Length: 109
Ligand SMILES: N=c1c2ncn([C@@H]3O[C@H](COP(=O)(O)OP(=O)(O)OP(=O)(O)O)[C@@H](O)[C@H]3O)c2ncn1[C@@H]1O[C@H](COP(=O)(O)O)[C@@H](O)[C@H]1O
Image (tube, rainbow, N blue to C red; front, side):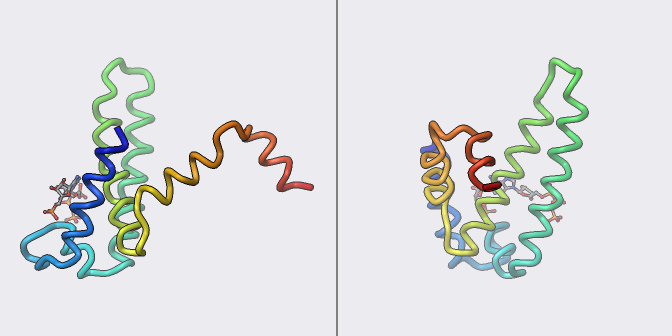
């Protein structure tokens, strides 16, 4: 499944060299980091609202759609800053078998 993230990340890298009027991703890079962060913030809020809306409904499609927008814009942010999905996946790998409670306790010592 993470292959999808890698395929998307490869497209995002290509779009760094594209004309802003030919590509949404290129237009975000051209507008700069603040615009990209604004979009991540917007998509984050839309995801939270969708999660609240979907909580008592069988149909979770709105939450899936908004989370996809959030992941996509987060990948654009990472790409803009020279990072990619592997940087995040490696960090999650590193955390395997490390209980969240144990990790929190280690920070509070
Ligand atoms: N996965 C996505 C993807 N998800 C969401 N979006 C776009 O993200 C935008 C979401 O913004 P909003 O919902 O806020 O809508 P909006 O009001 O139009 O946005 P703004 O005017 O506020 O910027 C929409 O334009 C969506 O089409 C995406 N655009 C592109 N991709 C992928 O990126 C690839 C490259 O896209 P281009 O750079 O456009 O060629 C595509 O082939 C896709 O694989």
